[in-house]
Image 1 (cartoon, protein in one colour):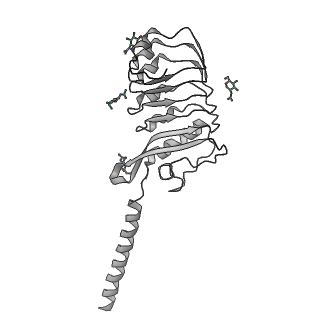
Image 2: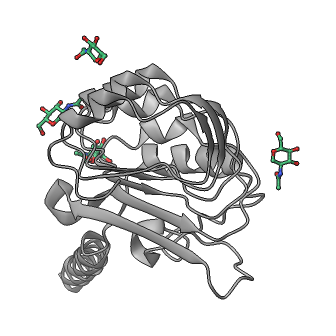
Image 3: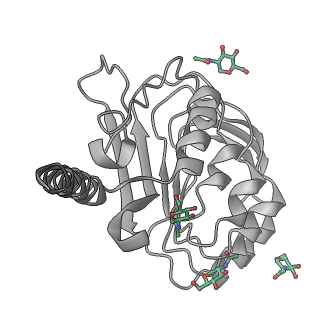
Length: 216
Ligand SMILES: *[C@@H]1O[C@H](CO)[C@@H](O)[C@H](O)[C@H]1NC(C)=O
Ligand SMILES: *[C@@H]1O[C@H](CO)[C@@H](O)[C@H](O)[C@H]1NC(C)=O
Ligand SMILES: *[C@@H]1O[C@H](CO)[C@@H](O)[C@H](O)[C@H]1NC(C)=O
Ligand SMILES: *[C@@H]1O[C@H](CO)[C@@H](O)[C@H](O)[C@H]1NC(C)=O
């Protein structure tokens, strides 16, 4: 009899222990595992040598930043997430602001693996390469700023596929060639910053279609 009782007691204690611990685990909102994996690829393309994604204290949504060493005091390392998924247990990245970090890589096409992303701000690094057309597949993307990097070459006409874009900041790079007429199709734009590049020709007349533009 007493053995049965103690077995029940033990079972009860075990259940309480498991329940208490799963409650504390449930209150933790962490980044979706697919996005955690994507972030390793993104970091590598950006030229970040080692991204520490340690459980909880390396989680970009829990820490609200990337777990990297930052030497420059003027830098910005900010990750914003929407953690309302799966009863507030799963987060998706909505904003990535990695500025003045001396990033030497390329603009990462892999950002498309963060489908809830709204803001890309990678200003003041040494990033090169083209603006990845894959980014146009992100349904919530409204803000792109890649100012003061090492971007070269002409602007692709495909930029007009970024239909929901409200801000495009490309200033202070080494972009060249004509400004494509098709930019006039980005009618949601309120800001378009192109200065300090090596563009040729004049501003296309189609930009007159950008009636919401407050800042050119
Ligand atoms: C909810 O969590 C499951 C298990 O981790 C995951 O497969 C699923 O994608 C999550 N849902 C969302 C919307 O993140
Ligand atoms: C723009 O936003 C609308 C409404 O949020 C969405 O349905 C659509 O897929 C978005 N467009 C693009 C090109 O992603
Ligand atoms: C910028 O791009 C040019 C031309 O591709 C290259 O020569 C230069 O080394 C780059 N600068 C940096 C800081 O990456
Ligand atoms: C975009 O703009 C170009 C040039 O202004 C125009 O010829 C074309 O029809 C437009 N494309 C779309 C899909 O709106």
